[in-house]
Length: 365
Image 1: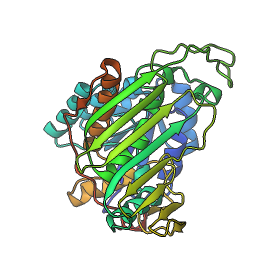
Image 2 (image 1 turned 60 degrees about the vertical axis):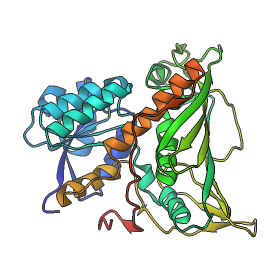
Image 3 (image 1 turned 180 degrees about the horizontal axis):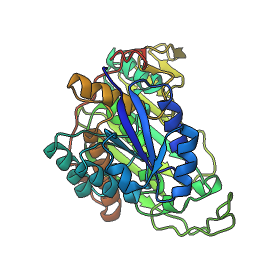
């Protein structure tokens, strides 16, 4: 690249630390400014990163910002993304892309009309964990994929997050908070989804914030906290998915994919690496050496890959189209659970190109 993509970060919550740590080692990106509704917080983060703190309006109007890194709370994702696009900036947004499919469509249509890019988390699928598992599947080592299981369970984010209330409002919950990691991984491994069926529930237990200045405060629960779904992929495989804030502990696998000649155990899709295990017809599990994906990746690598894709005039992997399809899956799961009916998805997406085994500094793709 001739010059790095100049980044303006909006939203200085917990996740921003991980993006800032990655950006410091990514030559494809240069952080220019930080903004937040809380200007004191923005100033603290900006000072640590040795950049300017600006108001949200000033950052959006800044001529030295090429892309807005939108790390606001889910309810603000669409408004901030649209404002950035209207200001002529590319956008990379934390998951989910939007809370409703119609809003997500609006974001992508606006971007297309202005010749701008939209990228979206999760980019964990670009790391060695998911990419090595995909490589195993694509090489035919488990035969024809038949199905998969994906499970994420915990008792609730109020036990560790100092301000967890937004996790229990629309746009949060186990489906919209953790679902994107698992659903994006399943689409990456097995291709797009065509129909879903689901069930969901919530308990009536009182949830108290355990840490920080709000410790002891009760959290109102306005979403389902236990979700089970069946996904039918376009290629014929069937995935079963469990996402829950109601489970105090389990030994369930994160993701396993089953084929006609074996199975592959996939590491935690909320991180970038981890050990892939393969079981073939010998029926013995063995560790698989990393064979694909960006080494040492972290949050923000999807934005760096988008920067290179813009420079090269090709599509980027952590794309708005992928995020839109995952949003369609989540909205369809919610509707299927509410009405007890199978839902047909209205979107599809191509599996992104596999990532070569490489370091992002060189960005071999």
